[in-house]
Image 1 (cartoon, rainbow, N blue to C red):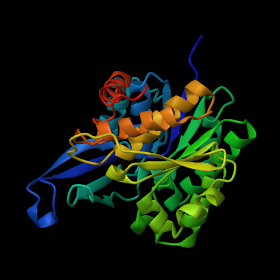
Image 2: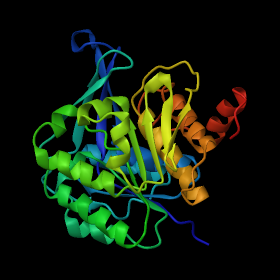
Image 3: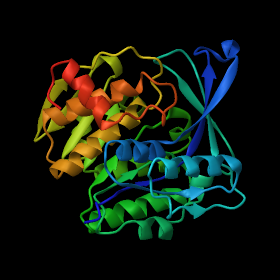
Image 4: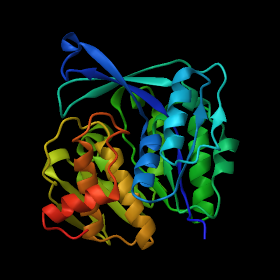
Length: 313
C-alpha cells in the first residue's frame, strides 16, 4: 500500500544566515541554507518516516533549482510545483543574537506569492494524510486566495489542516487582509501551533487561543527553552523543554511542527502528552544544528534524546 502523504503548501526560501550570530555590524559572512517553513516541514516529515509532498510557485532562478534538488534528495515529492517565470526566490537574511535572530526578506516579486487558487485547490485530494499551510503566501495575492482555497478544499474533504501562523511582524503589519486571512486559516485548523512571540504579535493571550481554532484537535503554544503548553479536550498541560546544547534556534518551530504532524498521522490526530514531548524533543534537537532544513532530526535521534531523559518515545 502506498503511504498517504502530507501536502506542504507554500514557500521555499533561501536563508542567508549571518555568522557569527549577532548584529549586522558584527556579521562576517552569510551561509546560504535551503529553508521556508513548508519545505522544512516536508523534509522534517520524511526524516521521521512520513511521506511528504511540496507544492508551491517556484522561480526559475538558480536558488530555486538548488532548493528543489535538495527536497528531492530528501525524498520529498516535488512533481506538483508550479513554475513562476519572471519571479525571484525569497532570500531571508538572518541576523541577531542567539535566541532572538530575525528575518529580513528580499526578492521581488517573490515566487511563492504567484501561486494561483486553482493550483492550490487541485493539489488537495481526499487521499492526503494532512495539509500543512505556510504563512508567508498569506501576505499577498494571488497566493493569499490560493491558501484560502486549499483550506476550503481540505475542510470539504475532511483532510486535517495543520498550521503554524508564524506572523512575522513586518509582513503581517502591512495590512488587515493578511491578518484576517491568517485568522481565517487558523479557525479551520485541526492542528495549530503558535509561539509566545506569535501571541504577542497577534495581540492574543493564552486564554484567547482556543477561539483562534475552535475545532482544533490540539493547540500548542511554544516558549523556547521554557517548554510548551498544549490544549486537548479543553484542558491545558505543560511539557518541560528537552535539555540540549543549543547553537541556532532557526528551524526549531518547523521541526516541532513536523514531529507533531507525524505523530498525528500515526494516531489519527488523537494526541497525548507523549506526542507533544516527542515534538518538543524534535524542536530542541533542531537548535543543535545551524540551518533550518539541515536541522530537521530523524526519528532515531528524537527517540535517543527521549531515552536519555527517561521519557517514553
